[in-house]
Image (cartoon, rainbow, N blue to C red; front, side, top):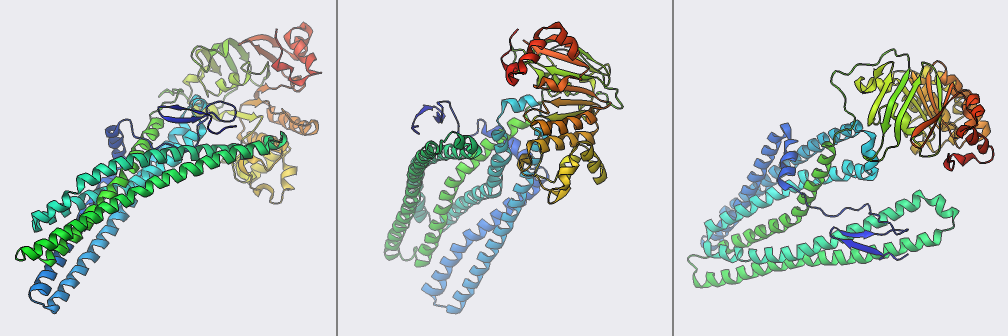
Length: 621
């Protein structure tokens, strides 16, 4: 497992990972926006009413800079007038008090500006985060099929954080730096042009060297980020897959891979920080060189042209020079922050610009008090453009009927029921509920009439009571207990230390698989849907637990139209209809006994499962 087993693209190195497949790490490259102007203008639009705050903050920065530019001139004048010429200590102390007032005022105004910038930044990211999260909730499942969850979370967290840092800190530093440079140049030129030229002449050299070293620093840290990302990915995979690692006794191999990655991160980190450590000393050397040159030439001028040049003037220029070079370094550091922020903004806007594949009509009707009949009319669907999963599916389900859907893995069973809830739109054909096409129905009212119990139900890190009530937030605690009793979940819940207030861990993994299924049934009970979907709800459950779940499901299915997906064919004997899907089509349909009597695909499937449960994955016609 050689960590250097990689290839390079124009974008940078790509790890080949454990099994030779490309795998990107979680670290991100230092990116530049594709369209700086567009990203900036769109982000600026999110300021809204905060434009006034931005204006006030910028005004305070300007006032602070003006005060700081005045200060060196006051010091120089005080030294010249009251130490060199008149030796008036009283007036000199008076000038020092004025100087302290100037500096204090500058710092107060500067602090106020920083506070306003933080407020503005928080307001913008609050709006961005709110709109982004809300928009993500409206996107169709097809978007999440294509995008990685990690990437979406990164945009909601990392990219938003980078934008905040740029608004709250980067913009402040940039504006303050630019105002300071302009102010100091004006101040120096007003005092003396010759000394000003000495200071300004160093700038082109600093910019040139900063550009060269800065490019090397960015390249080094880009590589460092990528390697840290690979290490993070390795750690995440190893922790998530610790059961598999221990089961196959691969601890040593995992440690070896981690050690190699960790060693690479160490080497790259040293290289990056070494390169960065060279950057600041070089700039500091140039600053010191400029100051030395200024003191040397200024001192010589004082001795040779004492009438024009003075110690006070030289003191002012030394202070100006120190103020002049500081914002140059500051702006250099801010550049990458602003670039990354605009690139992050583009990624955020990319999600906001994504339209849901599910189009909702403005005049869509609300679905209320439905009977629950469902009809598929020549339905064709595929996740990809030229690859259908279902073709010409026609199926009528009466109110209150129990329909079992069986077939090999990947035949489209789950896809069929996902289409009812309109998680995806059909390519061709229609789906009707109570003779109303679902595309004409308001989507929230459609889904309020649907209930789903999955093979692996999802639960939030909240109390059992809150998770059950999630099916209908209007219900009270008594309704929760009633639903749990119907679902056969009440007994095990009350035996827990905190009962219904027991907080579930991530995904409810502090409960057994059977207990999670019973909670999912209780959640469906409290939702009281007219159409119920059971997606392999009893798969991978022991026989005793399955009996409890089956009893709960029978209560749940009463007076409801039910679609039952199950690998265990023994669990669907009492269904009104059994629909067999294979090769994209419905190949058989009828009651359990009727299909067995035909001795076709279902008959072979049922009998062969007596010996091999997973035969549905291998059966062919």
